[in-house]
Amino acid sequence: MISVAEATARLLLLVDVLPSEQVPLRAASGRIMAGPLTAQHDQPPFPASAMDGYAIAGNATAGDMFRVIGTSAAGHPFGRPVAAGEAVRIFTGAPLPDGATRVVIQEDIARNGDEIRITTDPGPATHIRPEAGDFAKGMSWHSKTPLGSRDVTLLAAMGHNAVPVVRKPVVAFIMTGDELRMPGETLNPGQITASNGFGLAAMVEGAGADARLLPIARDTVDSLEQAFALARDADLIVTIGGASVGDHDLVAGSARDAGLDMAFHKVAMRPGKPLLAGRIGSSTLIGLPGNPVSSMVCGVIFILPLIRRMLGLPPELTETSHVLATSVPANGPRQHYMRGRLSPEGVVVEPRQDSSLLSVLARADLLVVRPPDDPALPIGHRVRTVMLPS
Ligand SMILES: Nc1nc2c(c(=O)[nH]1)N[C@H]1C(S)=C(S)[C@@H](COP(=O)(O)OP(=O)(O)OC[C@H]3O[C@@H](n4cnc5c(N)ncnc54)[C@H](O)[C@@H]3O)O[C@H]1N2
Ligand code: MOO
Image (cartoon, rainbow, N blue to C red; front, side, top):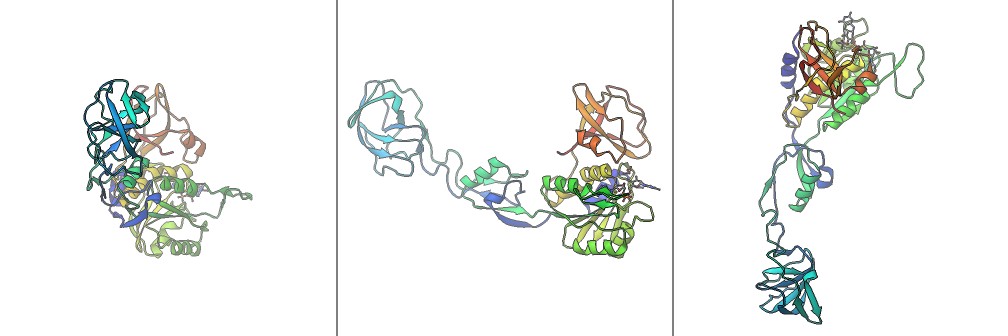
């Protein structure tokens, strides 16, 4: 069996960064920019007033008088210069008339007809936003993380209504098993509710992929073949269940028959041992174990890095570290990803670690990474951890 590190390295060789596409600005949130965009104009495009008041030429102190010669409002420039002794009524965001050197706020002024008098010494602030004071035409922006609201508003201000982004990876999920019924369906004897595909689809969508949940495949070669055919166009095909060694575990064989070039089968990890991966047609295939927690843990450890690589992001898992609030027993020969909860004292490792326990996983905050043959560890020991996505 290969190690988790070896499996990760082999997996990452199976995918490339996806091509780019142009999306409307309104659809760009959460996407990854495929290249930089440059500002189409200066921002602001003209010197503008930052306050409501009067634009004047030269300095002003309390008692000075000015004659009001017109108005400049946002979207409605005054259009003529202002000279010494003159003032232009101006509003926030309005273009500053030529010749004006400052804006005196209306609170510091008394107006009588076309005349204003400065009542309070206006101080040093000019209340002028200089042309290009935010950014100049040609400024480049290339966010290296998923576009957020602040990127989107900046790109809009830069004059862009479309953004080049990396195409979303399409991930097709095939849940396999004669025992599976869809959530909400009545369970007959021996049946269980299919849950894994739903959690994994949510997980990859949260990472920027497009998830497709295909119809449940039965434990027959024909049914699996049909499912592989349906999934043909996906960048990543993920089967769930049937990956182990039992008589009904047909995924590896069916995938081989469908042309799988296997990169590995079985990884020294717990949960997740029966994992398999390879290339099939123009897609990458990952075969996940069916145990619900195993499939979700493999999603975090292997599928999320693959999606990041396809999106052109650094693929590596980010590890953190925490102290133990509970002691843990010695580990066996497989790398163990133990479910744990954060408490003020450190990580509380869940006493029940069976890979079928979804309620334990849902309560967990993180996985404690126990290397193969790690000895028993006492309370207070610092351990490697991987935070779980929501
Ligand atoms: N003799 C051996 N038996 C097993 C081994 C082994 O090495 N030798 N490995 C065990 C390990 S570890 C795992 S993990 C499981 C995984 O086996 P499969 O991938 O073949 O999974 P299934 O048998 O199809 O299902 C396991 C379990 O999970 C339930 N399941 C399956 N799909 C879903 C789904 N979409 N949603 C919810 N639950 C699902 C299924 O009903 C089973 O209860 O094999 C061990 N056995
Ligand atoms: O490797 Mo299995 O995923 O322990 O339950």
